Amino acid sequence: MIINPKKNSLRERDLTYKKIALKLSKLKKKDKNFKVLNVGGALDRVGLPVDAIFDIRGASENRLEKNVTVYPYDICKKDSWNEIKDNQYDYVICTHTLEDIRDPYFVIEQLQRVAKAGYIAVPSKTRELQFCRSWFHIGYAHHRWIFSINNNELMMMPKFSFVEYLAKTKKIPWTTKPMEKVYEMWPMSNRMINYIRYIRYQALRIFRKPNDVFQLRANKKIDDYEISFEWKNNFKFQLVDDDLFLPPYQNIIDAYVKFGKGL
Image 1: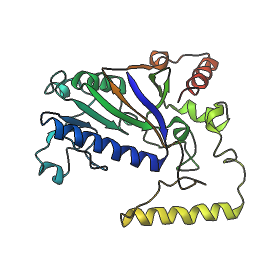
Image 2: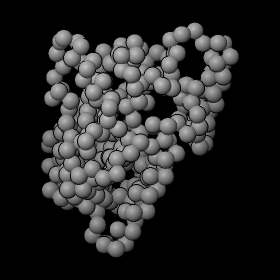
Image 3: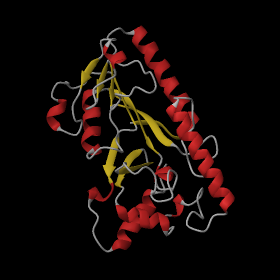
Image 4: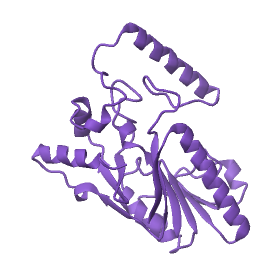
């Protein structure tokens, strides 16, 4: 069952991580056998109290010093999960990972197999289908999947090239709000402001200073940064149209428009 699905701004994301970390810390103090697995958490950006990390990149040295179990495998391969038994972990965390991998459906199956409950976060579809990072491509160039929650079910659609056409031509109506005139001629002042902001963003990254995610014409909160939810005792999920998209192309457009009616 999906619990408390919601959209988060960038700042709300950080607050949610802190709440999850506090919750897990309390549960671990109450029960010394309470175990937490982080799938795709090698970078450990949020300091969550975990007992194991499952990531092909391994884990940072500070994690290894804390006697955290590391599964340094490809999470999309069936054999990679053989070391983990059913319900071996009480809680599993998977944040901003499912959109990157080739088989999120399989990985979600494994999350539900190895843990009793968990927390998932993925980019908001409204951000993923906007020109938020570049004038030349929608969303994040390395992401493969777009997510939505509808009727308490997690839905996934592939981010193939056709969807960029839909965004550019505004055939997906729910993607156009923040950047309605991206492909019209911008005043030079707007271009210059965004250029200066981008240089500032990169400079802060180099010096590892607190920084909002860069977005063209963004406000400081960056609304609709992600969608997140907790779950317990499994939850429903599906690939829209069973991952089968065939002509006529209007069917694909209709599928994406319907997909956009969820969270």
